Image (cartoon, rainbow, N blue to C red; front, side, top):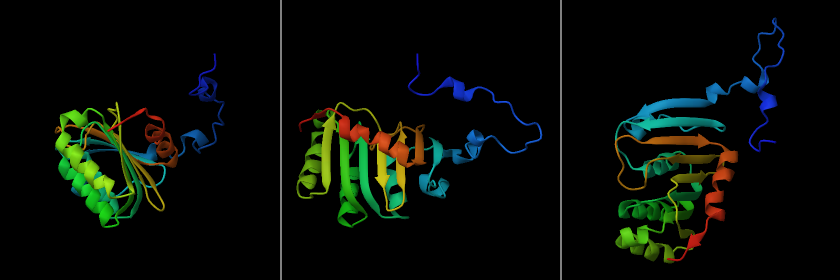
Length: 200
């Protein structure tokens, strides 16, 4: 039976020339594109953004909001599109997103929020919906979602941030993947295009 993810035969050992000192093509630069870091303060510890095809695997040792990645990217490059899914979001974050949008730092915003937030935190949701209503480039969607994925498209890059942290208060220890990869960006976009949405 064919495996839809990969063909194991492609990974069998190939006969190699003992005099050839070059790496096999499939191994070239693969490890170099992955970096592992423990971070306490995102702004201080993350000294650069990932380049195309590069991924940072991050583990926090200090509590910070997952939203913190957004201004970090916006300081380097304007954001054309922001798509974010979260189980939980607080009022400070929603107001900060709208402020960044109003200042032209983010052109378009789409938030996919757990529908349970409507009952768990109605004040935040009502405030967010009122702000979104007057801004045609801000969309708020609801679904039975627990995914924490953020997609940011700039003029040159496709950033993906995903991990355990919500856009509210988080624990001291969280994990994140911070990548710059169009293929992964397109794959994760399916969360926003194929999810079964619920009415507000």
